[in-house]
Image (tube, rainbow, N blue to C red; front, side, top):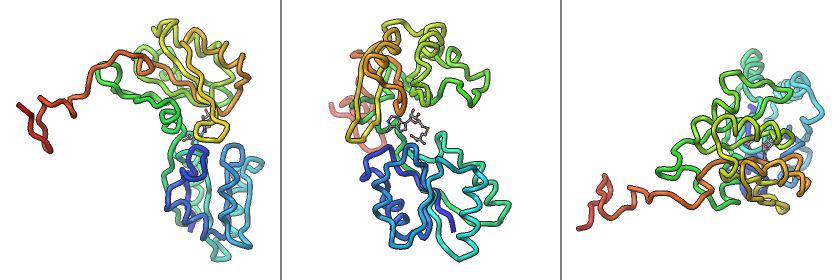
Length: 251
Ligand code: SAH
């Protein structure tokens, strides 16, 4: 059996209880070494085979799993954040399907949630934005044309931009073409929830300069939108004059 486990954004106590239990039981752990906090590996039992997938191909990962299966061993495939976001798990699951190897997925706290906590922000403010767009700039991995940043920016929704810290000048250009203002609030969250976490506030216009000044080149999220501003409407849910299924309106 193979368990794809989300390790969470960094802090070792932000993995789920289920994920942590599986780590303790695993005979083999294959972890995404570029971003997963290595302290998670301290939970591995004695004799557990540990592999860093950063230096492996998909085929090599599958070979390790295949061998473990033949030996009746349990494998944890440990991904950063939540495995469903830029986790490249689909291709692994498809190969496991072909090999008739059983697997399941244990969700994790994605870094965009870790970043919201670092910012003490709410992404979905009434009257500001009720939508979070998770996206990235095209890099070596292409992005479908219809999802080009300026087209997404046209919605003026909250945006959480992954994998783009090295592309802040073109990112700024695309955001401005899409209709964000130079002074639309923006933030860079570096290593959210890690001990070395850093939060930088600025605007769409200042994003590249903030990163440059603070030497932020990777492991950061870019958050953009007026959710970082001061104006919003109170929620209806907790409004005294608003009745709903669980609460009557007060007079
Ligand atoms: N599955 C992961 C994302 C993997 S893609 C998740 O759910 O978070 C890797 C990108 O995620 C990085 O380039 C960076 O943009 C972002 N990232 C991952 N961990 C981060 C963290 N702790 N703080 C800020 N950004 C992070």
